[in-house]
Image (cartoon, rainbow, N blue to C red):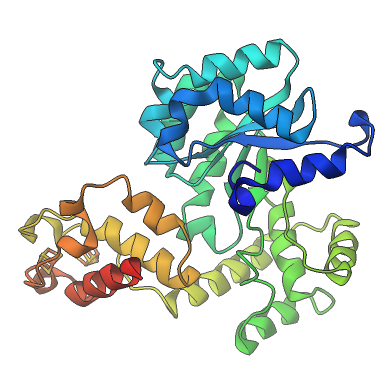
Length: 324
Ligand code: SF4
Ligand code: SF4
């Protein structure tokens, strides 16, 4: 909830929920830390959220989107967000406290080192593309070390995994003729230890029925099936992404001191997703002189890149896409 639907989702849902007994549904809300201007207002925001929803407590309450842009503020005791939310939990206004994260595994680690002992769940973007593409595997392992259940968002990566190119679909059909393409995304998640909840956006009743059908059985992937599925994922990414291996040969040659591999990883994410908020959000943590738009187009980096990536062109294209 929080900022969804121009900030009106809580009020709208509150109007609906008033018709039902409180114990007949579960309700989740998030602290809107996607906006740094909210950091010093946790008490006002939380009270307003309860009021708008017309409830006395939230079943689940999350630090929203722990990432590069807000981790320092989330950990800053002057704002007291964690202490305040713990008090609300003790007072019974929060049943379960957790967090969602779009940041790197390193950022999640900082958050967990500070607050991990009180976190009851964590919501991350997890699917067979992001297992390696967004390093979700490392995030799952990190959560497992902290014994924190994994909640999944984007299991079908915004619908991208609901259908595949014919050659890739055929590779999967050869292994499990009875399984639909979307079901593979869910079978993948059934194979990841620690996953306890999957949020899947559904647009109609048919999709809901299909998902119920899929989850009526637990059919995790065999090692061979997993290998093929991850090859399919790799192939999908390679068709769109630049093949940067993060060798970092280029970085010392950049007169602007740009973190080229990190910027290319964000560029790949932005191109693969077809836009979206992830890359702009991560870039917002960087000063202007470290952003793609700071590239001079000198191509010193390209002279040493073993993958022969057209880096200057990618930076210019990235800057242009971000300005749209
Ligand atoms: S082309 Fe851009 S990224 Fe490459 S070295 Fe020059 S300024 Fe740096
Ligand atoms: S030299 Fe090429 S492959 Fe290596 S980090 Fe730079 S852009 Fe990526």
